[in-house]
Amino acid sequence: MLRNPYLQGNIVVLAVSGAFTNLGAGVIGSYLPEYFSHLGGNTVALGLMGFLVAIAQFFTLLLGGFIADHYGRRKITVLAAFYGALFPILYALIQDWRLVAIISVVAAVGSLSAPASHATVADSVPPGKRATGISAVQVVSSLPLIVTPLIWGWLIDNLGWIEGFKIGSMYSIGTALASALILLFFLKETMITHSTSGSCSVNPNPWTSFSEVKAYLSTSLKALMVAYCFIMFANAAVGYYYIIYATEVIKLTTFEWSIIVSLQFLFAIALKIPGAWVADKFGKKKVLIMSALACAPFTVLFTVSRSFPHVLIVMLLLVVAGIYYAPVHEALQADLTPRSVRGRITMLWSIGSAFSAAVGALVGGWLFQAASPATPFHLFTAVELMAVVVLVVAVREPLKKEE
Image 1 (tube, helix red, strand yellow):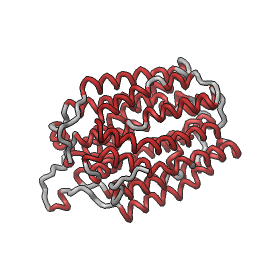
Image 2 (cartoon, helix red, strand yellow):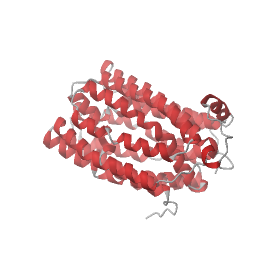
Image 3 (tube, helix red, strand yellow):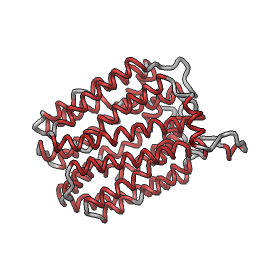
Image 4 (cartoon, helix red, strand yellow):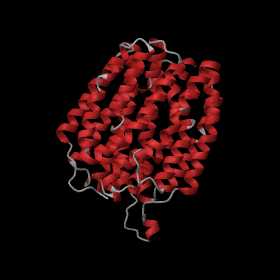
């Protein structure tokens, strides 16, 4: 087993907190699209919901980046965790697709803490092992996802979509609260702010701060963000619709789909840290290009699958190809970004990703219904290849990594 000496301190706290989230609430989003459909919503409405969720994230991430760099990472991370624990209760009580859409948009405000949590991880891992450290957090927090989807799949297949989803949401309440309490008691601040240092040199004006950040936006960093926007658009165009296509077009049962999801997480856990180690050792840009290029054909293959074994093979290969992209991208971005502006740079990355996801979800939902269910998955392939072009042409790894 690959041992990671950097799995300690805040890294452990964030990983364990994430693991408790993924014991329940972390998979609500995986089943929400088909639940939404069973309540009477169509894919156009689902795409509109995804658009509004991402737009809400756009504005909250904008604020979250300034909070992370000016007032610290810890408080906003803890507050957002308790805020997020409210929503499994609402999902358990409400059974109207319009209200579910509204709840999902309001829940997106919890992304306020995303820049702070990403920055905390980057702050807490040595630069030379950053991809491995980020992957370790993601792996440990994802361990429950090997089993949790099977529980949800069993509940839904045995109790029906409405009652099964309700029961799953109810047990998610306790795990979400446990996750928030872990952060409250154990997470440590990593940012020395103007208030804690006794200095007033940091300008809290968002617009002045943004002009300061522009000086750190190198060509490589901007290109890296653009490539990620393409990746987020592509994934959002299909993300809500995998389960709908699998259960309504291919005719898999919910439990069969849950087996696929669980095995995807198992493969992700097994491969993510070795892949990140390769990125730290041989170059992050190479891994990003290989990952995006390898992912491109699998959504097309998904649309021509017509049985459980075929879908299982395609979806596992998709994970094998794509699991490295997010942590390696985050690590390369941290390598290119000074600590003092890391929260705001993460904010720019996050809001660009949110806007791209908003458009992708809307376009994917419309194409699913207006063109054909397979069309969003073909679009995914084209946009992934566009991301590869940007990475090849415009991204360069720094000779000296930022601390």
